Image (cartoon, rainbow, N blue to C red):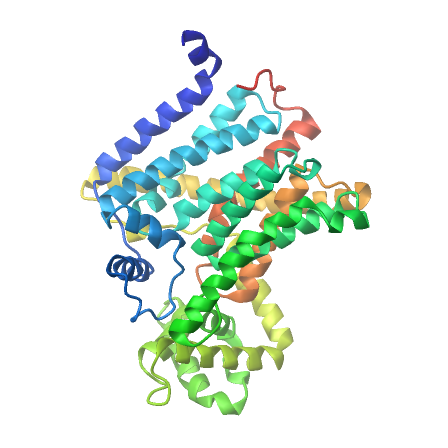
Length: 438
């Protein structure tokens, strides 16, 4: 037993250190947090509890609400479980770094300090899906970075298929994962034989989960889609050129532009202007159901984008895509009872956010270097896998919506750091080689 503890001292030290840190934060905050998005999760849990979805309007998918349901909608218990998820996430980070041939000592310090990033603690107190998504993404990348593309093991494919299916049920945005994984697999030493590979198992559960849920949503709201938000989100991308839309959509354009200008003048988040068009019932009495209204928003957005492609591309790049590389701060949505603790947390949080902003900028610069390296060597290694996923997420989220886009980057921020560390290790030999894998 003593030898086992010595052989795994860094792993157990990581778990113990994070347990103490999270318990300290929990005792200092002693509360749970809710954002505007939390309402829809809570409503879904109520419907799960009542086994009645007659009032379901298509707002949320079941992945995260089901966790809350299993915890009997006890929000303090949800916070504690999410803190436990944070510890498990750190363990996967630690194991991933070992697989990438960092030493145990290095893996320990990187995982520990990354886990002490205060935004992790903040998200863990919220009734929001980000902590669960971070855990699932970290598990997926653990398998992908463990020589996945050289292996053909049915068990690994099944595990990944399950993890991605759960991710999709948490957030349908991740539907691109199996396609990107299989594309990377094909690109690496391409042959036509690889088209019929055991890795096609990856698609089975994710596609079943996605289309089954879309069928359920269609039954409830009349539209075959994972949530009713798609049209509304797409309309957010038309914010700065909404007035260029077809005249047949003036009943949407006029109030949309009006709210946009008012919110910009008042220094408010104008990306929410389209929500005011819905909230103030500008489509009534013809369209009153949320799903019908967002469907009309979708029609307006598609018509406006198709006739203003250059504007769409310009504003997608300068707003939605650009915002992905910012740092989203959850601290303003939290209320601390202890003034000293609040000031301390705010000070540390400000410093950490600046460091993460620097991290993202460094990652972007390195991306250009590795893009050149890819054309030069045509190798698909761990860095290329991470670059593919992070940049695919950045582009896809920008194409779909505008507003709080920096939250989409949260599950990838640690892996941006991993890319930088791999660069420093491989190009400058900064870190010692791994000596032992427990």
